Image 1 (cartoon, rainbow, N blue to C red):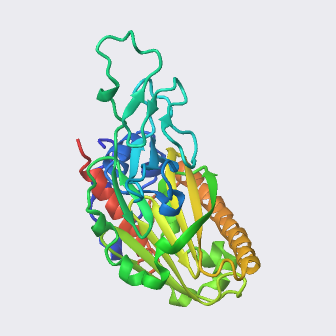
Image 2: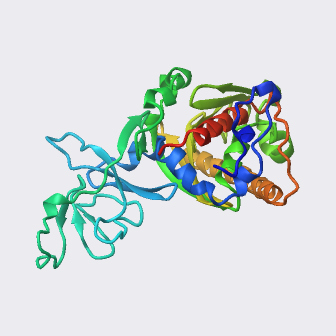
Length: 369
């Protein structure tokens, strides 16, 4: 971080805080540091357990450049097998073990040369390796990540995380309550967006409702902006608002928008959970992956109405995301223009942005060896 003055990394009180300087969003050298100091040492979302119900069900993900593979192991005495998360990189010559999500695999077979691993990551066979001296399949396993299943969501950490998982989600269970337990939802659909902006631009934008009246006219009509509240905790933040929508969408209730360090969001509305992973691709590109999960209660009784609500939710969400996509790409162009000097943050509306950026400064100040 030598090119970055110490003043850029100093702790800033909220009432006098400025945003991160433009260089933190446009310098290509930051990618390696962020991978090492942030992503490898954090809990990242992989999947929901409803995507991993049976032995061999698997989900692929990108952990800021590290391909990973979550898989349900073989059942033992009729008990569901363990969920493990591996590097999705063959130990032979780095081929991919899985290219996409799948169901019921009996084994994990590299797509490059056919090396085959058991569901527990142990190499079982390697074609035509009999002439390789001192080669033993028993010596080779896929590297395994730490895994934690919480509220039906599967998280993993590539290295020793900077926080205990319980610290990451402290207080959320009590806030959402048993009736909105996330484990009760079922997977419906994934939608992805490729954005021409740094991953932090998207997170910054997510963390404040300040822009809602100016960027999201339909969402602004649904939320009560005057009652929009933001709470920050050690490793996550919550934006909350009462909402009023048509019965065909969400009905009345409240909207809970959780962000979990560093790149996971949980958007919880009546009858619907939307998870969001923000994946760095390049200094000026990221991919935002949304998974939509809906309550499974009453699906058989009113299947037609439930389908209509889901379609309306997907359409409304796409409208909001395309509005965010446009403004985030505009912001990235502004950051790269050479014009921008870091501006003051709004203490009322941008406290979660300040919280995120203080955690970033903390990570940049003391990156792991």
